[in-house]
Length: 338
Ligand SMILES: [Zn+2]
Ligand SMILES: [Zn+2]
Image (tube, rainbow, N blue to C red):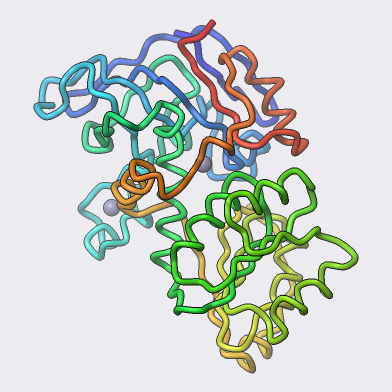
């Protein structure tokens, strides 16, 4: 089969690799659509937990084309989205309902072969059958949306909270919509690209503020006492550092964006103390695929405008470059296309 391979850091090839085989409790999924994400870029740059070589790709849906002999509940031809986070179910964290911190955690496209390939092998229990009305493109958004649902489960949004989001990439644009459904009174977005700001407004942002010189003034006008919730959806350390300037007392700060693994920021513990701040992390997802599927199926979250490119696998090397340069929104690949 054809697959994207990162043989070493900062190196990418599209090549023929052996078709995957499945163990008794696994299935082979023929990938319909697979989405490119910032995490893939971190893997590419060796800023994440993956080892090389790796076939990346963890946001995908497809069709079950082969089942292991112990699998009884997934018929051939079943369309599925796949939770790439694989949990053991037996360790301390799994038994405390914190499966995303599983001590034996594996990630499809992170620690084992992923979905920028024609076929991918996954445990049957990671597969979520899709409702008919979900398109392949929507199926590839179940995983990123699940991460947003997990983040909302981590936050405690109070009715009337003012929310500020840094970054209007695909995740920021999903967060805008999700937070508009959470009881917030306003959801304000800061971003440096004008087209992304326009899209944020179209998708329901109360205000879209250009990052830069007049940013502070605009944000003070929108929320004179600061924002009850501030979310970083950029993963840029410099953005994180200044985000706290806009957090009001009793506020919650959410680190959603993935910064490089070894990046640091300056933060005064005195400020956390003085302002009663809460700092929240949100890693991946934790059994939040089902609510994400419901949201997509009911049209609560519109992901179609977030897709800037739909490409065959061969265009991956050029696409990851444009993505790194901030020239794309969500890029989807259809590995069965030549
Ligand atoms: Zn992702
Ligand atoms: Zn576990």
